[in-house]
Image (cartoon, rainbow, N blue to C red; front, side):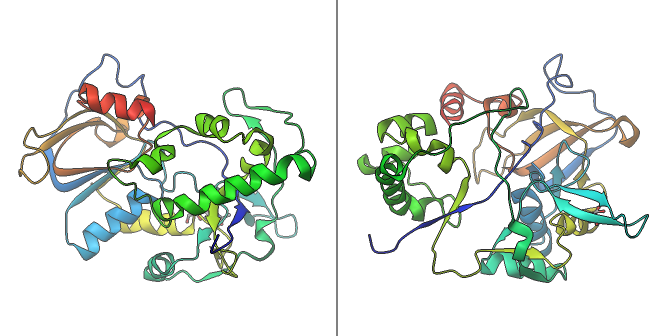
Length: 317
Ligand SMILES: *[C@@H]1O[C@H](CO)[C@@H](O)[C@H](O)[C@H]1NC(C)=O
């Protein structure tokens, strides 16, 4: 192994609420449009980390018209920050991040925060995490056995580190999967449960459950946070920056039809979006391109006009 890998414990809590609210999509199909069609170059579905970043770049750098849609009432997705009262100063609040705990220390991260005038600092003691295991279906704590002795975990941890090393270039700093997968890359197309069984990784699942990123230990500062120690700060700024008809929050896509011409054919894709009743009801959007920046689960993607191949691909993810 040319370079050892370090698995950094990094907690992400609270799943993003599904973007597509099934109750809105019932009866299935487009909502009743009030008002004109919004015409844009790119419609982005999902206001987590990828959507706002792409929307800002498309609008500011590439001068494209955009519309960004998210089901929550604020941007940020898994980035979430609570306001905890400061007993020493009534009326003042401490930010406490209960979602994403830090940002990857990459040139693209530093440059993007700088655009919004936010200084990034070392995570310091902010990443002092306590790990608990929770069943997201029930919200109940799960009592996973503590990782057993190193004799039982040593070999699987070594194996896991080797596999992470092997696939590192496909997942970091962004997902860049080969298509089609080569014979040596089939693991990238299996789900985590199958992967665990195939390599007998069961003894280390409780340990691995806390790892989100695989980073080089030579990087002394893998994560950064804003000086304010409020990870949502940048999303407040992006929200203000994009505010207007191009930002549809508390909104759900109810139906999408894509241009039959495919990429580059210059056709128009259509989206119907249920917006809060105060904000106009249902919007109809004509977009040259659609960028799906939400999780591409079968449930979320049900509003698209998917063919059977696409459905089976999404189902297997
Ligand atoms: C954290 O930042 C968000 C977005 O700007 C803001 O709405 C929130 O009030 C901040 N929280 C605290 C406790 O400062």
